[in-house]
Image 1 (spheres, one colour):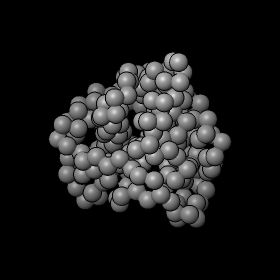
Image 2 (cartoon, one colour):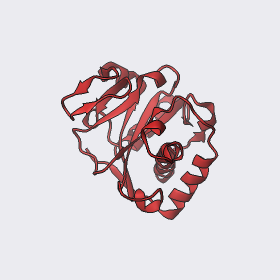
Image 3 (tube, rainbow, N blue to C red):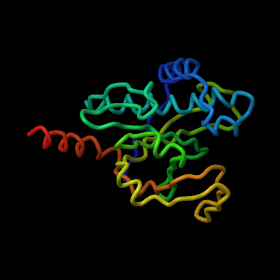
Length: 198
């Protein structure tokens, strides 16, 4: 399985930070409370970097999309489908055995038919700046239906021995190797759309 690796350029970072500072407060975003004094803006920035990266990937593959991020039920429309971007911050590049998570409280609130997962590399000792986020990887794409059928459910306080992690919120997890590669997805999706049209 191959990832799509993307350098975080000044343009990507500036677009993401401009979006992040204009987002309204979102009380259910628990990640912002786990970070330092700039936790809220940092949590929003990490999510918007993931969105900008996915937009660049869709454009580079000539996949039409419409920005629906203001709806809060999904991020983008793709033809007759809806897509949600999920970004996870890591200190190291992703591995096939790593997991991608969706918080339990968003599963019914967000109605996207497709999830795209991004792994954002973070340099831990850097201030909130471009230097803190050198690269991102689009690691996998999966339908919500398949995600629900294969995901492992962890409750708050559960311990996952596969990665020595104790959950701070209830989540559903899938392994990266259980998803469609972002390298293969564009052709698969275009063939799917073509078949629906014809």
